Image 1 (cartoon, rainbow, N blue to C red):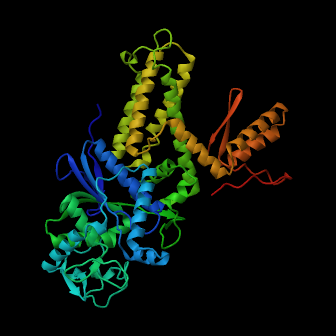
Image 2 (cartoon, rainbow, N blue to C red):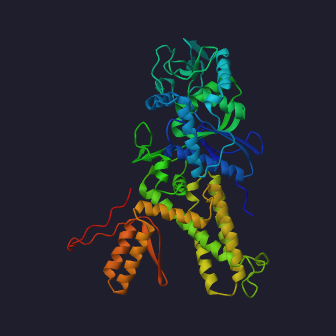
Image 3 (cartoon, helix red, strand yellow):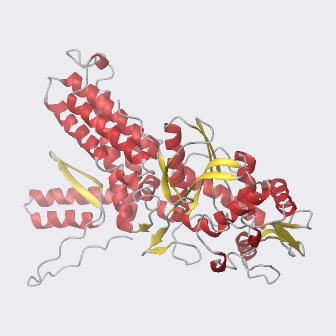
Length: 529
C-alpha cells in the first residue's frame, strides 16, 4: 500500500504551499467566482471552470463531502450595456447566457456545482450585508449610492499586496468624485433611468460587483469556509474587496485557502473580450472535440499562463485519440473472454489468477505518480505523461502478446483488466472519461478531424483507393504524395496487413525539397487554423 500523502495547495494569501486541512473534518466548503453572463464564454472562462472541476473531483476522490458553490453575475454594467446594444431586456439576456454557459460546461464534462446562485435571486442577503457594513462604520451613503470606505480597513491589500495609492480607480466603473477616497468601491448603486433596480433602505438600485460574492458565499457556506477560487485577474480588486467587506460585516469571516488560476493567453497576451483576442468555447469545440479542449486546459500547471495555439489543440486531440483507441482495443480484447466461450477454460473466472509482476509494477507506478502529482497542488500537466503513457504502452504490448501466445493468457487478461481499471480511474478524476462508448468518442474525434481538413470520409476513402492503385502500379511517388498531403491536413494513413485505415494526427507539412531541385507542382494545402 502506498503511503497516504498530504494534499498541498498554494495559498495566494500566504504565498506558500500549505497542507490542506478543512475546517470541519471530512467536509469541504468551496466557492468559485463564475461568469458575468452577457455573452458566450471564452476559453479563459473554460480554464477556470475545468481547473476547479478537477479540484472538486479530486476532493471527492479523497473522500471529502464537498459543497461547491459557483455563482452567476446576472446583473452588471456590462450586461446592461450589451442588452441596450441588442435591444433586449437585461435580465432576459443574462438568463439566456447563464443557460448557454451551462451547455458549454456540460460539453466540457464539468460536474454541476452543489449550488449555482444568481445575484438577482439574493438581493435580500446582499442588502442585509450592506446594512451590517454601514452599521459597523465601514461604509457611507451618497445620494442613494453606498460606498465602502477603504481607509477604515487597515489590512486592505493583504491578499494582493496592492497598496491603496496603487489601486485602480475606475475598475469597471467611472471615477466618482463623491468618493472620500478614489479607491472606495460601490456596495450599492442608485438606480438610473431604464435600468433594472430593486428597493433598498438607500433607495432603488442594484448591487456593486464585489458585494454579491461576499453575501452569497456567506449564505451558502457560512462566514468561514475552506477554499475560494477564481482567475488570477480577480485577486485584485475583486477578491481583495470581498475580504474587506466580508470582515467589515462580520469580524469572524475567513477563507482558509485562496486559489487562483493563470490566464489563457493568445500570442502571450491575456485573452479577453475587451482586447478582442479571445475564442469562445463554441468556436473551439466547433472544430475540436470538447475533451481535447479539456485536455489542453490541463496541459500546464493551473497557476501558470497557458498560451493558446492550434498546435497545442492538435496535440491534445491526438493525445486523447491515442488514449481512447488503446482503451477501445483493450475493451474489445477483454470482451472475448467475458462470456466463457473461449476454449480450454480461458473464459473461466480470471480472478483466480494473479496479475503479472510487471503489471503490478505498472499499476503501482501509475497510482503513486498520480497521487504524488495531484497532491502537489494539482499538477495535472504531469499526470497524462510518464506513468500513464507507460500504462497505455503496457496495454498495447500485452494485447500483442495475447494474440500470439496461448500460455499465460489468464494472467495477461487479468493484468489488462486491472491496468484498464486504474487508467479509467485517472481519467474519471480528471474528467476525461467519455460519457459515451470509446468507439463513439473516437468517431466524434474523426469527424472533427475531417471538418478541420475540409474533407469527407468518402474523400479519404477515395484517396486511400487511389493510393492503393498507385502502389499496385509501382507509382510510389504518387502514393507518397497522397499520404503526405493527407498528413498535412491532419489525416494519417496506416497500413495494417493488406488494409489501409486512417486516423486523425497532428498536421505535419511535407519537408521542403532541396533548393537545387525544381518541382513543377502545386504546394500541398495549408494546415487549417
